[in-house]
Image (cartoon, rainbow, N blue to C red; front, side, top):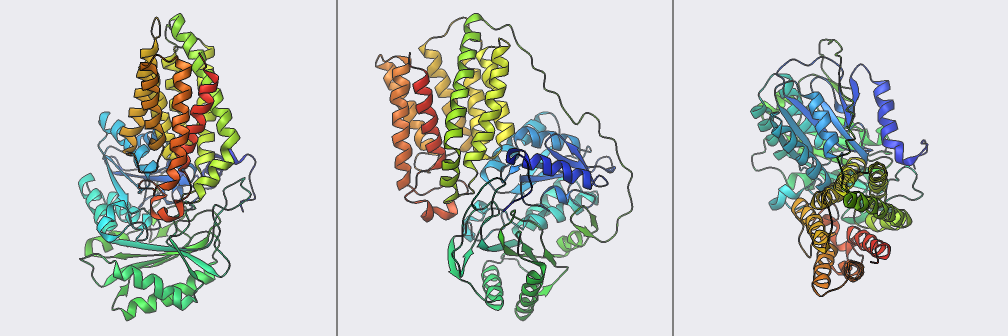
Length: 569
């Protein structure tokens, strides 16, 4: 259990501040993460990595010469927001373009993708390489659906060394793609991890059992097995990885035994010795291996094995020097510190000339946000426990962080007389920034879309409510790419919209239409218990999810029920 903290909601930010204070020779704090504090040659490609906090040394610990130029750091186990990724990449950019690289998780894909669009629109050429090394999360013929775990290190290291050598963005991207293609990982857990402030771990492994195929965000494994001996565990991991090797594999591999939080180094070394013997027996030569904590999961009791099949070019960059707070290889010449100017961006709080009607609706929107906050707070623990069944358990705390920030921003703008469009835009931006993760991206974008649809009008009618609901729904479906039956929030959202529009068409009042739509959403959320998840972190654990409703759909139903009770007219 995490013991040292003040306010659990501030844990990630305060830990990052302390990390920077302890490593000023390597990194500097920027709004959203860290960048190198030493000089970077002009025109060098900037490798920007990142993800949720709680995985140290990943991701901030891998920033430095020969590796990453910057790291966007989200909340605990939650992706950084698009704005955070954008600001880190902007600060890290040295004129050679930006390569974004991160594990293939839905929230990260959404937020990093939005940041990439913004960077490219501003003329900063930006590419993305997803890490997909975890063989347990999808079969080989669906390799693009696999998530990234400790294979992050191989991709980041090779890409970072290529950038340090002065290669072009095209070549850095090419090497990152090839390294990812030749990397395979598999993990096991002996017990779950506990988020700061939580009284129980995200999952437990029965005594005498081992969970195979865990994720690094507290997701349990896909199957449980009797606790093996060290030799049996080495045999299991090596056999499964060799069965999944790339089609062009050679006979030289990097082997990485990675501890996930509480497995001691002596145990990791013992296992590594057995792994190496098995690899040698299989005719493979182990080259410059790693054994230790490299991509962790707070206090999880577990480990993973990663194999990278080398070719001559990849081996050159894997072996190249690197100097970061948590990963060092070879020797690099000392570099001068650089001054970072303007890394803390102040958002201008412009209040446009709002109409009387729009300012009044803006105040109503702020009231509604406060109601949403109250219902999320009331059900935060319940939503987290529901999410932990087949996910990472952060839905409750993520929604809480997002709606707290959204409510504060909305109330501030409403009090200043802003239009409903500005109130909801500010609220959506704050939600996305603070929550991170998939829900942060979706809810933030949807609230913004609703605000833009309502705008700053002289008067408001039922048609404007329809436009706002349609805009909210379209933002969710277009950004998240989920469809009915995927077991997501969409399964409750679409019945809500359909019922709301039908009720208004039938002459119902706004309050009556909302009440009927909320009931439809709540019932649809309940029915998701019969579905298998086809999207997000719960997908690899579909069987565990059966019999339990989707947490995103449930939270949407709870929220709409509360809004309907507040707006009765």
